[in-house]
Image 1 (cartoon, rainbow, N blue to C red):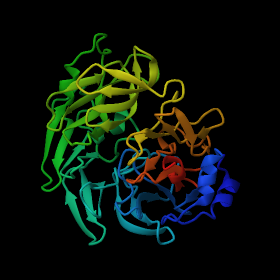
Image 2: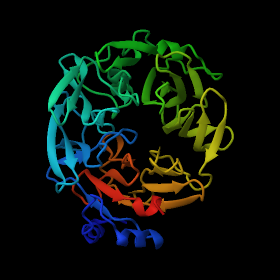
Image 3: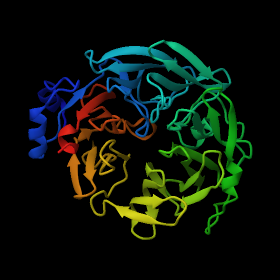
Image 4: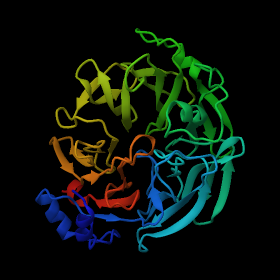
Length: 419
């Protein structure tokens, strides 16, 4: 387990610039855990954005992060966090980029690098009665404000897509933004809200998938009486032609108190397809333009990881009896989709366990075991949200295992994926 003592023994492996690590290769051969180092420091707390965003720049030098001075409560409208980047080649130096009043504990401000750009970061903020997006070229320090927020970005950096953050704040605390009330709070499936698409060059936005459209696609078992509908977890396909999202709606009893359907659509909102209509889909990611990896419920094997084929009813089991718990999942870049990076929620010892799964061999390689105290639970829990750089050489996570509050850590995986 990576305790404070474990960290101190591995902290000598400090550079990721990236020098050869004979010790790391030896660790991979002996099944030891790979070295890890902390790249943020207190007294303030730090965490990144979501597991499926580009958080490391093209040069593998700068890691985006949020900074805050409190924990263990919900954000209030006047709570401002700092936006910054960590310089891996300059002693993890913190450079402040801006601030935000539109954020949550699980996904921050949707902070990420804009695809197709060399050095432009984007994040959400709030101005009076609307959520906006800030775009900043970190080299020129020129901020552009868009009149609407973002969530997912297209691979060419042309389009952004976003759900109703006002509604999310009511239906799924930890994923929406406070400060602006949902005007449709008493409307079960509004026609004037849902998923919007925004053109980053102009800021022009349009509603492309209303809540009412999915509410009209009634499942065989129907909807619970008074079921309220919302959307979450938008991701654009690697070729930029389609995107996915989760359609959630209340159920009458049980925990969680909602069902979830996985939906795909063209980037203009047309050609909707229920990729997984079986009441539960959780963490997910595109494998390629036509396939999605997701933890889901399916009649074939129950709750497992599957690869779903878009616009068909096909679902293939992944991981079998090895990947047996829900977790944040991505494919490691530059590995021909042979390696899956994912984590787990706290186990019986309250350890969170990021790991790599090698599809051809079926081998699981642990990356660490990170203790999560009980006070980190519910909305303000600290998931590790593992995220690989674009070259598949290292992984960043958020963790509180050193009793320093949430901080950002880096794990070198070259000795695993390159052997």
